Amino acid sequence: METINNNFEKNNVDVMKEIYKNGFSEYAKSLTNLPDFFNLEKNGFKEFKKPVCCMDERTPFGIHAAGSGILLPEYDFDIFMSKTNPDCLTSHDGCGAGKIYCLKNNLPLEDSDKIAKEWTMKMAEKYGKKHYHISYSEMVGSKEHHHARVCYFDATGQFNYSDPLPAGFAVNRMDMPASVAIDEVSVAMDIIFTHGPKNLFDSENPFLLVAIGNNEEELSVLKQELSSLNNKYGKLVKIDGLLAA
Ligand SMILES: [Zn+2]
Image (cartoon, rainbow, N blue to C red; front, side, top):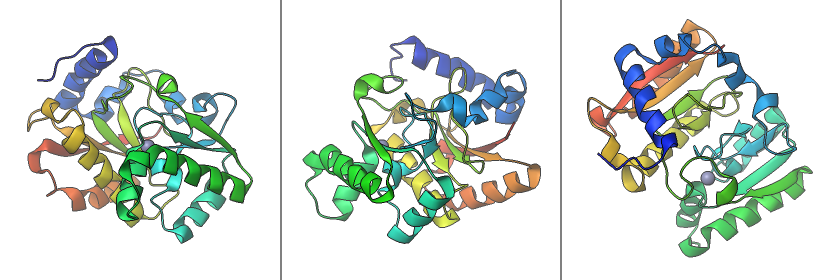
């Protein structure tokens, strides 16, 4: 196991033990403040009530899209913007989506943060939104290192984790097509199992893909969508679910 060197990560371990034992939904029943995690007003960033933030677990604010949408095809980004109508587009230090964008477009990897920031500023200007760059000091958790235990796959488009829920990537299934959202989950898994805390996970302590649906029927559709990723990391990854509050 990787050394746990701060309380934030230790809390995650205790919570994960409970979730592994009884499932995410059972665990969530013990939380009286569950509705708070689905309240965008409470989970904005600075003065912004509806900022678009990366799916990165270190930016659990507002509405989510990997790199604020940098990986989305132009058509899907346009739909995303009209559906969500945000007040700000954010970029952030150490953005993995920015790195993937550079790899895809043959751009210098060492400049990925600068390139992702410029892309976000350009889109903010195009759509008449504010831009804010979130620095490491404003990010949540262990700053330079990924610490996600789960990836939330959220059909409400409203969800943000905070204590005591486990840190997790937030993929927005409400405002993007299934295939695009599934690609983002796949990217989150790659981040964890390439340069993330991969040593924390084994078949008994898997990385969880947590579907979040408004009802049981929606939840089962989401889980079905996630099952297309079943073979990618085998037993190191498991699908779980949570009903929105
Ligand atoms: Zn990012």
